[in-house]
Length: 167
Image (cartoon, rainbow, N blue to C red; front, side, top):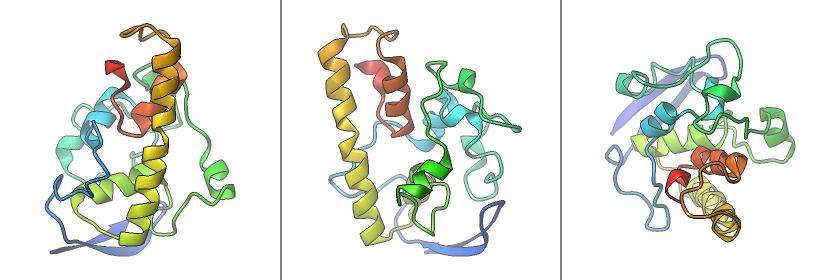
């Protein structure tokens, strides 16, 4: 077990414990196709998501990450489109847990690193599974491998650790 203390722009003095091995012992219902490092390298969230959290996560996650220090930039995303809703929308819909004020990806990064919060983990894994509907829509409306088809949906799937380049 390792305790982590977070001090970034959104959390001061937040503490959690890593109880599982890094990148292992995931819930059987949760099988992401991309690691957080792969997602950052591909380009997700317009590059704005993790610019002030480097101290919390492994340095190698950021070596090839596509980040934008100033503001969200959709051109940094793998599919070159903005597929994100603003954090204020997520808050208004009640999708943000107080321990993860940045939302899903922050939860996933911390889960990947070994933090476990059973109730919140179940909720987020359920949300992750619900994204499969977008895979079905791409499969129904696009030729296999046509990465220009439904780019926004494909980018959104990348944001949820589904490798939409393989659909």
